[in-house]
Image 1 (cartoon, rainbow, N blue to C red):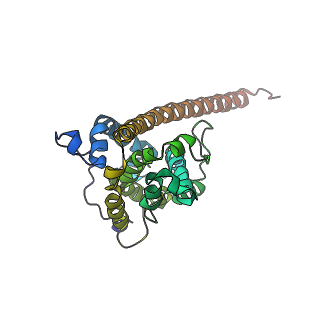
Image 2 (image 1 turned 180 degrees about the horizontal axis):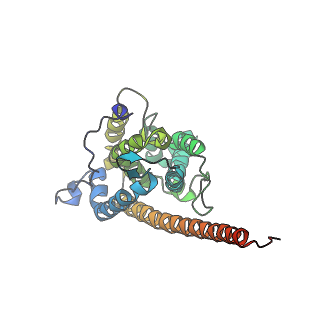
Image 3 (image 1 turned 45 degrees about the horizontal axis):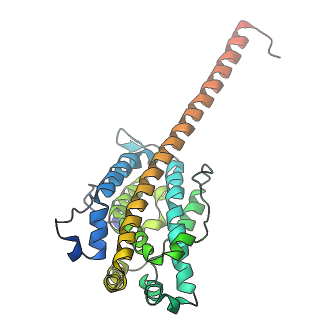
Length: 277
């Protein structure tokens, strides 16, 4: 199992700290990294602390069997972001009016390399995990966001944050899931081909360089704001998941308590010779 994902360093990655360089000289991707550095560090901390809760626990060096239900719940929550921005992107790629945008939409329509889209793999993962989570954060297909279609340049923020996450922290997460067993592996975090997606990453980064000449100063600011809002949304999702898992745990414990009381009462009644109606 582990041979499929040869990542010998078990230490989770940390956000790259960009040098103190004038923002005017930074590429769009580097500027996003600078603008979201604080939130990126916080989200990394939250995910690293919570991932073990979704995996089988270790006991005396062996893993106990455990359902991937918590993993499925978290995946279903974050899948909504991919469904939202990839739905908008697919709508742009299929649009018959791309030329009316004056360049931006035409460029976006050809930016995403074939095989980079994650929505089909997320559907596959969620079906396999049979995710049926709380309605507030459960698995539901969303329509393309009108806001993203009206401001297509903000897709740069979504694509850089969500795709590059798979190539950095996602590699480490994938290793932890592989170690947990086949029930916990996610197609989301893997790519077809001999290079395991590294070729797609190179092509995407090369295409993204053209954003420098297409974005106006205002659009560039909006990309930064969207990236920051996206990280805030992810951090808020972790808080929602925390509350939901805690609620489910309390309910489960309470249910077990009631069952234990009933069993104890039944045993006591039988022992005392009472007639049970």
